[in-house]
Every structure is written in structure tokens, then in C-alpha cells.
Image (cartoon, rainbow, N blue to C red; front, side, top):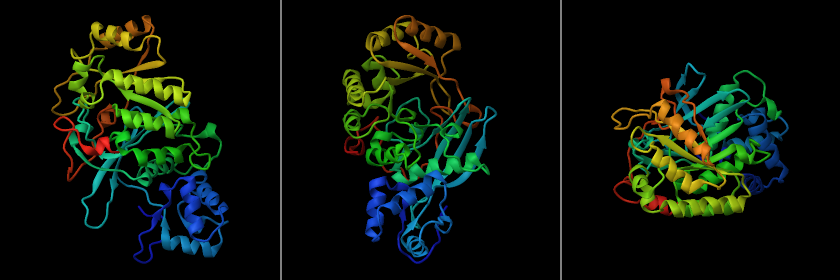
Length: 384
């Protein structure tokens, strides 16, 4: 969906992908003063306006030049789904040009009392090959650009708000939290994810608190160390097993970065960012990783550490060999962790009637261009 006027064959710059410094450089390249960048960002993010004609405090000549070289383009919605529990899911088309095969990604909005969480995608598919994740079974095609990532949030803001007027009062926001937990491994698309996160947290952007923007990773240690130096957001780690032997099976990147190395990177991130804690995601698989012995091993790893464990009931998908742990088993596991000094909660399953729950996002991946990590560690991951 293009919200600016189409003229000529010039490839336009999508303004949604520009950080504040990029926007300032962009307007400077047009021969304009830096304050024009601030004006543009306020129109884009504070007022959710994507039509240059509606940016009324911009000079008419400036607007006309913008129409020639810039645009505000977001992914096209091809399907909208509403869950009985209020969760909403969008299937979005990522158009890569006239001769490219359309690719589809998904994003999910989860409303709760006092907050609204938007789960966004960072890649078309995923190469990490985690065996319990439906997204991973789709294979991988490409990274999303910063504009395609930010465009999801911009689009969702307009879709959820509907006819309600834009409010700059943060207490009235419908989207209060952003999690990079949709399709893809965010740190395998490092540059674009960091740029998008910067826009989300910028006070001229979406102005979301750093504690409410969460980047999730399955354990790309070099990128985690780099992230600690370059940005400041919340970090979630997909752990899913308390020992290397089991994690090798569930999360193949563990064969390259062992649990001890991963945890060292976590504590380094906390030290550099002066953050409160790391959230460790742990999917509960019946008879696989849900026994008390596994809980005891987790305690050994995380006790007296600034860690929170988020237990996720497994959400089934076609042809999976896994089953969800019984509720009583999950409760016993959680209670053991809490009783032994590790904070643990159980994630409430939301949106499973529309396949919007954790691990169920699949989109539609065409032209899978890379092998999976289960067979070979691809250079895409190590060089992101």
C-alpha cells in the first residue's frame, strides 16, 4: 500500500525506515534545514499521517519535491483475523518488486487490561530450524527492511485505532509494548532490527520506553554482544532446555553457541545496559523438557541471577511430533522454580483459535533461498 502520490519511475525512499539521523541527512540532501526532519517525524509518528498533502505546515514546494523522491509505504494487508479472546492477526504481503514472488509475513496484537502488545516479524520465514516452531518449518527467504519492520507498527496503529483520533497521551495508547517475536530471528537481521528499534524508542518516533521494546533471540552470541554496545532495549532469550544435549535437538544454534557462552552474553548485556533482568522463554513439551530434573537444572543455571523464566505451553501445528505438557505438569514445574529462587510465570495462551499463538506464525514463504541450521550453519546468521 503506497500512501504517497505515484509519479515517474524514480525509486522513492520509504521514510518509515529512516532513523532520526537518517531523516536529517535526507532533508539536508534536499537542501532543507534539520527542523524539516523533526516536522516529518512528527507527522509520521505523532499524527500517523502518510499523505504529504496533509502535512500542512510543510511548504508546498517541499511537499511537491517529497512526492517525487519519497513515500510512506507499509505492507499490504491480505487477511485480517480476530480471535474470540480479542487477539488480532494480520497476514501481510511484502512486495519485493515487479518480478519478485510475493512473500507473506504475520503480525499479532494482544490486548490486555492496561496494555496492548504488538508482536512483529523481522524476516520472511526463519533459518534457525527450531524443531517445535511452526515458523521454522516454513524455511527462509529474506530479511525485512527497517521500513518493512516499522511499517508493521505504523499500520497496526492505524488499524487498531480505526476512527479514533490520534492522541499523544501515552496513557491512551492502544499499543504499549512491541516484541520482536513474530516470524524470523531478529538478530540474524541485525542492522535493520536495530534501526527499527531506534525509531520505535525515539521520542520523535513511536516514543516507546526501552523496557517495552523487546528483542528476542535464539542465541546469536556475537550479535548479542554487539547489541549491548549499540542499543538499549529489553532482551528475551529462547532457552527451551537446561542442558546442551537437549538444547542441541530443540534449538540447533546451540551447536555453535553453547549454553554457558549464551548465559555469559546475557549477563554482559545486563551489565552494559544497566537492565533489570533477562527473560528466558521456555516452551513446555510433554515428556521432553518438562520434568522436575529439568527444573532442577534450570535452577542451577539461573538461581541468584537477574532472570525471569516465561513458561510457554506448546501450541501445536500440523505434522508436529510434539505435544503440550499437561497443565498440572506446567504448574509443578513453575512452582518448583519459584520455590527455589528462580522467578517463573506461565504465559497465557492467546489467539490459538486463529493460529496466532506463540510458535504458530507461518506466513507464506516462497522461493526458500537458504538451508536450515539443522543441516548447516549458514553464513547469513554469522555475518548478520
